[in-house]
Image (cartoon, rainbow, N blue to C red; front, top):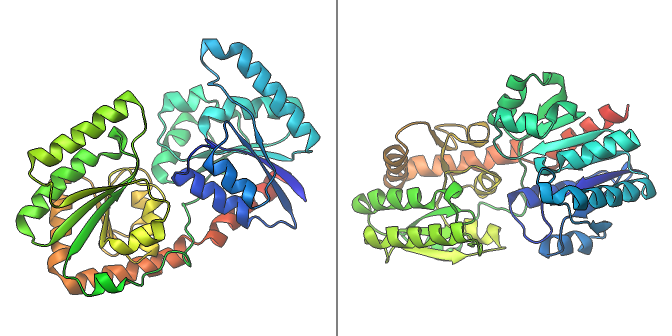
Length: 364
């Protein structure tokens, strides 16, 4: 088996990126590859990976470009290099662009290929800052995240778009008895409560839908970090709910680690920040209404498994949701199409096969 070293964005929490990495780690062909993971800190994700018997190490990786990190980054690089030597690492694969300088040091010192997985939208300045042109390969999760790489001048044959995946057996389209017998419609949004996830926009959408449709509930699932900026935004979301008089129809669930169950509790997913939750909703047979950011346009078949809204977000998203609520036949068609599309396009096996193809190419 050829050892592959993975650098995880975090060990302390489990978000969309961590779920995707976990799928990869646990579905690699273990007759060919041995995954080994480095976490920058300990926590629930590190525990989850250790529980399935994957060798894991904690090495603090300070932000490379900060002046105060000059000494600590050197120590971290030495630890990484020694680990890679000891484990006879053949490829390094990072799930966070911030770690590109670290993996490039390993490439330089050990002469092994390195890969960066781009899960966020980059600017051309960030492509330059994080030295993507020096990598052996970049995996992008969408056309939008690939574009700045191409515009910077990175060859197309060193980039591959691989969509997020989902365990379609874990997420099922079967609805609970409570939902089957209820005429109530539930609209959900998933993500940490912070400005990027745009929960305040979701409240505006809820207000417009609530004025035209009865028996509709809205759920906000996600935690809020103890960060001043995020705490302020959380208060703004609560104030917005009060301003629109939506206290009786909008609820917060907090952090949930049971997404398959949660997806059974909603009828439509709204997302304003894309991510792997799109695959989870569609695998559960739920239409997705999204803006055109990130991977949304790559994952949603517009008008068939949901809608991708490009302009006039609040009005258009509200109208599409109302259309689904009022048209059961259309809603049922989209539910079926979403499930089938997820099964054919977002399978874990397909996802892992493509990544292993890159490994094989780099290893010759």
